[in-house]
Image (cartoon, rainbow, N blue to C red; front, side, top):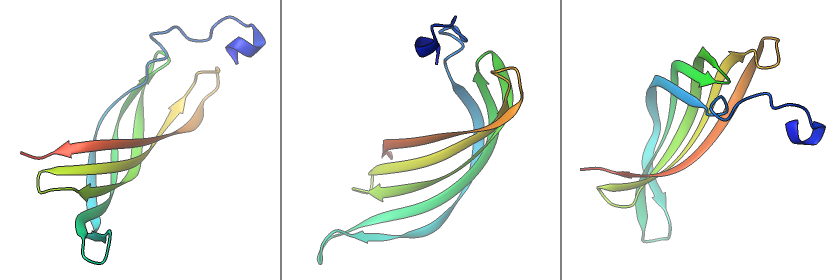
Amino acid sequence: FEELSGAAPLLTDIEREWRYYGGQLGYMLLPGEVFLSRDYAMNSGLSVFAGAGNVDFAGDNVFALQFGSQFRLYATDWLAVELTFSDYVFETTILARSKTTHNLALALGVAVYF
């Protein structure tokens, strides 16, 4: 919007950084196996989680709820690949009016267990 309209910047570079601090509680819905072929299977798990914390964005520090799910595929007994989907829900007043916003996140990660 700022570049297309030629208007003055709404946020500084520091205010554009998005930070979330909080905690989650989850439940494993579908522990089991994924069969990649007739003779080869890998352990897996599908879980859901919910949490709460604070979002620091655009000069505001507000309370937020977080909901999501995660699929984990265990390559070995010490290595897993994770695909996580999260929704951060919070009130924002960036454009001078209060509104509820949903910030969706998709992450692909590797977990090492020791």
